[in-house]
Amino acid sequence: MSASNPRAAARALGIDIGGTGIKAAVVDPIAGELVSERIRELTPQPSTPSAVIEVVADVARRLEMTGMLTPAMPAGAGFPSVIKDGKPMTAANLDHTWIGAPVREMLEERLGRPTLVLNDADAAGVAEMAHGAGKGQRGVVLMLTVGTGIGSALFTDGQLVPNLELGHVEFRGHDAETLLSGAARERRQMSWKKWGHEFSDLLAQYEFYLWPDLIILGGGVSKELGKYQKYLKTRAPLVPAAMLNTAGIVGAAMAGAGAVGRTRRPSRRP
Image (cartoon, rainbow, N blue to C red):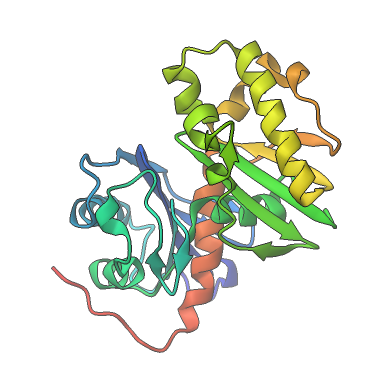
């Protein structure tokens, strides 16, 4: 990588840690594009801190072997939890031993590079607002990522309100995502019609709370939008996410690019 190329110099490692998969790539945050192959591995089970960190480290090593990931690049990681001071406060889709673990420090030590950690849906939302379906949108924008769980990201005039976690609001006596995530739809053996009607009721609840001007739908179920969109009734326009499975990686890298100015240079554990 030539240091004389400003865009190349701004590249960062984007990591998307989920309940079912761990994905990573080298990203050009300015363009919002992957500049390396996207590597995906299954999330280990049980998904303990040590097991997950090892998979992330292995994926990073494989990217280093391609020559695309260099030592000078910072990293950003989307993580399925409320994140406060670099630590997960919840663990709905990962092992409960993650709660309170110093995930940012663990990643920095293992990867040997400055790293910023944020909620995974927030990371996807950052990318969609900068490069995707929310680009140029003012007012209140709500992004939902529906897959293993239901993630959410909220923006007001382009500013992120972090750690919203709308998947855990009560819906019909349960956490919403336990009834209406993509995984829950399969578990409950719901048709798209039945799921669409129930999800529409959940959207009405979100709209009552937040009055968004735009709703962006991402995650695995957004790929099937044509099968259930007619059952969704919303006040705000509802559009599919534009970046699909790259949003989390790109948004994490965008956040991580800001970590390059941190003064502490982490040591790398062999």
